[in-house]
Amino acid sequence: MNLIMLAPPGAGKGTHCSWLTDETGVAHISSGDLLRAEIGTGSDLGRRLVEYTGRGDLVPDGLVFALLIPAVVAAARDTGGYLLDGFPRTLAQARRLAEIGIERDLVTDAVVYLAAPDAVLVERLMDRANREGRADDRPDVIQHRLAVFAEDTAPVVGYYRDRGLLLEVDADRPVATIRADLRQALADRGVLAPNAA
Image 1 (cartoon, rainbow, N blue to C red):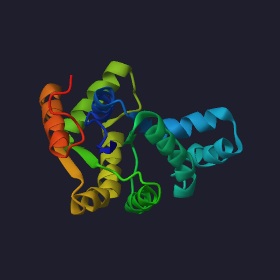
Image 2 (cartoon, one colour):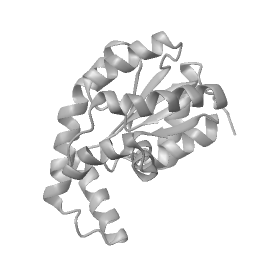
Image 3 (cartoon, rainbow, N blue to C red):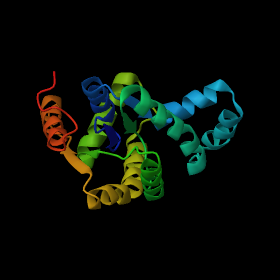
Image 4 (cartoon, one colour):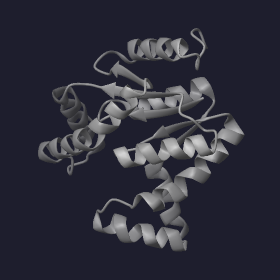
C-alpha cells in the first residue's frame, strides 16, 4: 500500500501518520526527516542541502528526489509500501512523483487530506506552542505558515482529486472518529481491512 498524507500545520498529520503506519506496517517516510538525516551525515549532498536550508530556501526538487526515491524503493521492498509525509508540496513535485511511480511500479493508492478550519488550526498550534514552550510560534507566523500551505498545496489537492485518489477527511473531530472514517475510506479503496486490529 502506497499512501500520501497531506495536511496543513496543526491538522494532526503526525498523529494520523503514526497510527496508519502501525495499522498497515508500511514505512513512514518524512521528507523533512530525510533532509535532516542527510545533513547530519556531513556528506557532499548534506552540505549542499545545508546551503538551502541555512538560508531558509526551498531545497530544489532534484535534490529532494535524490533522497526520497531510494527511501521509497527501499520501503516498498522491505515493508510492502510507504506513507509519504510532507511530500509532494507542489504540483510539479506531484507530477514528477507520479512519473517515477509509473516507471518503478510504485503507484500511489490513495492520498489522505486532513482538512480543518484555519481558526481550529491556529488554536491547536498556539496550544502546542504553549505546551512546548515555543515562543517563536506567534499568531502572525502561524497565519503565514497556513497561507503558504494553502497556496502551495491547493493545486496538489486538486491534482489528486481530479485523479480520483483524494480522501478528504474532516480533522476537526475527535481522533477516534477521524480514524474510523479514515479506516472506512481506505477499506473502500481495498487498501486497509475494515476491521483491522
